[in-house]
Image (cartoon, rainbow, N blue to C red; front, side, top):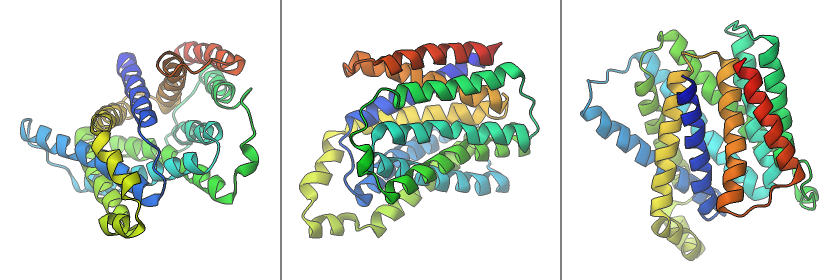
Length: 298
């Protein structure tokens, strides 16, 4: 189970690296279009996979919670993308990462999962690690440029990203650990439909042509096909692993471990592949994160 959790963290790191290499969507239409592209690939891949495996018979509960999963996932990615494009990346990322508090608190209150003192210490250390890596020591010249719209996007991303594992864990508890694959299939099918609907509402192809922005939007999808495929693979595998693990591991252990490992690995990867300098805050965050991983595993 530990290896599966680490594998999920690695998938999310690769997802972030692929997203980082893609040109930033400049408006709502482009954001929905990007989400629709990789969610559609995930959904198609899962449907094709289902044809070569045992018959997948999703129950009514799986369809209901899977649909909710898809809507929440689309909302999460849209709000996070817009937050990154309208305000400081470091602060936006901190809100997004700190959303692990939502499923952890839900696990300890709604589902009455016990968390020892070391798990609490590990959770606090993870939050400190996020702060050190993403905020401490960074320049704040862009902080004054933020507005209420950016804060709203951050808070919504925090809420929606925290609800994704809550929906998955609720499903697994109700289904006794069954139909995790079906939940993933239904979830990303609905996510693809929701994001495609959002893209159409925001203008679709006609909006691109009328606005004269085709030179900014269409090349993103033709020139970045491999990256979008990479996002689809890593997002699909990472979320599938999390959906399975959510019914088998305590939330106070699973979510801090995956999120914390992801942030630490992403910091290393950014330094190696993008030559980003590791600041004192980054070094302190990595050290604190390693201590947090040790704490939650004791």
